[in-house]
Image 1 (cartoon, one colour):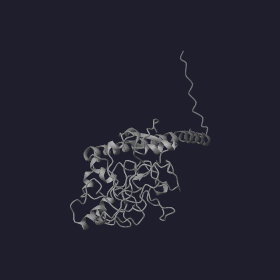
Image 2 (cartoon, rainbow, N blue to C red):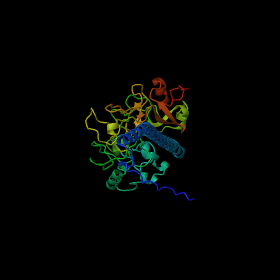
Image 3 (cartoon, rainbow, N blue to C red):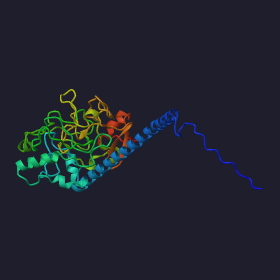
Image 4 (cartoon, rainbow, N blue to C red):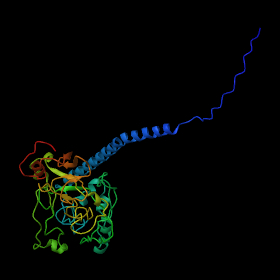
Length: 342
């Protein structure tokens, strides 16, 4: 006898489509939001760590260039004449060179073509060529936590004696500054601009500012033998303090709000754009809005800033470093050896 399977009843229609309910969708969105909130700080921290590493590597390359310069010229790069002068390719690498340490390091950072701009040209043509140089931003001098590596507006009436730079031109900048020692005012107050012309510069009547006690300053020619405190105990080049609102050059003009520590081309002579001090009145600190402290070291990084030492190593210096130790680390021959590393 054959059994017959009864026909299967068709599925009943419930009138409800498969999918998420509104409540389920909101729960999923909330979970995603929580995950993003948890992961975002970690991602931001990882990115900042990468930027800090890049900044450290740039300082390392700069410190190596200082060593190469010393090997070739038997002294560290000069600080130049003053903010009123641009580097000149025909005036050598010593005290007759108006350009500062950045300008003189160019050949030792595979940027020798920039150092030769204007070489051998008549005065008028050289002024134009040097104006083009002043608007150039070479790689390796901008902290990635601060701003893009591109020229920014100096926002002032900077008109160097030997360069046709004009109002409205952009300028290449450096976020790193050499250590001039512990002067309260790194720029010599009455000589900050430099001589009026080459004739005045050569005159015995022109009195240059007094010497400082760091590795680079007005017309300096510091040698390894001058660093009697030891190269591992002496600051060379570090990150400079800057107000965040001036990163892009859009700060207001006027003495009360003007950032004089970032208002000229990086190829200019001795000034606070490329030189900072370890004077106790100028402690290092993290970049802060509204705080003008353009003689101090510091950075956009939290906790510490980068500093290359005269032996080529790069240290992270805490902002709360003992201020006395900090002062002596900036001086080449004070006779104090700081045992505790920054």
